[in-house]
Image (tube, rainbow, N blue to C red):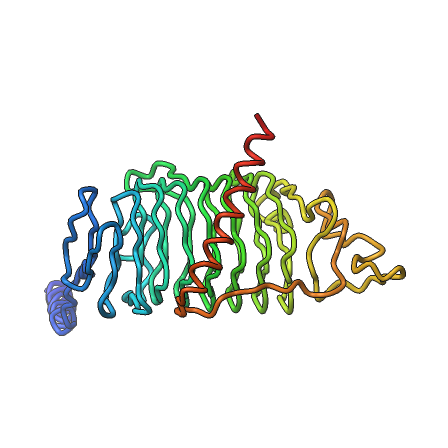
Length: 340
């Protein structure tokens, strides 16, 4: 009888304790995504004005934009896209500031993007231009390729990222993830955990004329293909270069092999202490990062990188940028023809 009373008392106490615990209601994150559909219609806002193939924001927006239409310009006009500051998975549209989905020849310019998991995501996007944008306080500033909603691989091919300010992103400034023949040029990449992160089989990408400064890792590489990296300024990063092969646990991955000069000139490294006896501006000894990863022509002086001030699109700015983009495209076409 005493045992029954004891069990009843324990049950009653447990019931009362559980009943006193406040019930937590699970709230699903609100989807404020704006859609630019393949037919050019805009859904989810009245804050985008269309003039032909140019879609321009008229004010700040809380939420992201998914672009499904090719051959357009998305102009932020200096306005800001704000995310919810939470971490969302790689397939969750709520975590994306701008997603270019299955489209080509899309330009995104003059836009501030902050507090998203992925500031800009290129999902099976080709021949697109990202320029004059500021991406800050995201988890990843720009992700090129990755995993889609069915967990299949998606790609980023022949895109250009130029003249952007990419700063203070918690994980990576730019992540190349299943990215091929993309050009990263003329950007300020500063204060991120990883300035530029190269994942998976990403190869044939050119990373040139960027200021890569004050990041924990200037360039983070994880089992990549061969990419060309030259005329960048690596300044005051904790690690200018880091390869996942340096982490032996739980098992050591192979080191990636990348090209760190263009055959005549390499990069500027604030941690390079070599001499320049003949005064030609190139260090007398190579800058060895690791086996098969050497800048053979390290620069003695920092590269002058002309970046147009953010959100200052004057006529001169457009003309200057047009020359830059045309030059990059001509170089890409020439190299492509040389390979054939």
